[in-house]
Length: 392
Image (cartoon, rainbow, N blue to C red; front, side, top):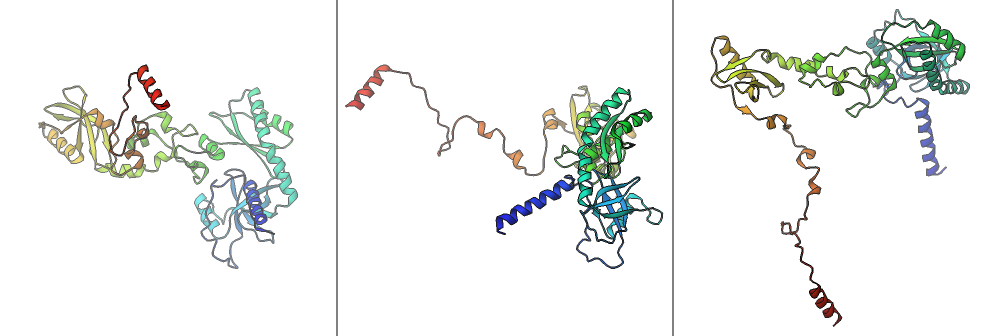
């Protein structure tokens, strides 16, 4: 076998692995940092199995064969069996169970029967091909029944004896008639599971505005409520189009840096206080938390002038106002152009160089001066003299 055949074989094996796991790279994947440690005789036989998208479960390996990560196995289900992929083995499984809140002493583990046979894989692939068509038909059936719900995904069991319908609804839905119609239409056992908008985005996946894969489909397992107070505490503009994620809810990343902002703003004065001076009354405009600067607008001009103050200066003015004194002048007035400009303390190539620098008219010569050609008036007599000289 020459080098070209080996390269083609490696590419085929890589393609098989990618299609076998349904391109779920990053779907709540866990890095096994204990994979280089050799297995000990008394290691646990509990494994983590992942099914379609983000559905996972813990199973006990009762088969006599050794299974490892990325192996496709047949596991116990009710009824029949299901097909999944091993995502975690060894001692790291107990840490994962502790993260999810499972108690191994009280949890009843289902069994791993065997590694999937070719017949199991063939039946599993046929079931997966029917999921899209089933979802579209079930949406039509639910609409005909007048149910206020959206079926977002359908997952067939590995042996195609059961189907899980994931739906979203704002209110309680009576889907007993829907289950009868679906069971009669698809000849399988029906299970309805309600999910939220964030869970639907995690199951579908996508790319966020940051350019990376969605957090809910890669590493997030629980969803904390996000309110507009998180944006207010971080001095973010309350723009619904920028604050909402692909699920239509507020972005989960609004809570990532919230604790740092709250901790940093403990030393800041109350923004609801009005600063009084001989120039007028000033109210809070905006705050730069990390530079410890505060802007106040108001005065005799009726809000047109904006003054930038440090946190220490604001505290001094507040103490003077509490004692019944008015300061003579708050600080230096800041123009609106300075407020709109973006100030950066670091060198950025994209900010230093203008995007339109190549659109400037004129070409630079070696002397550094732009030489412009002057248009000369057209003279027919001169053109004839030039032609005569060339002919001579």
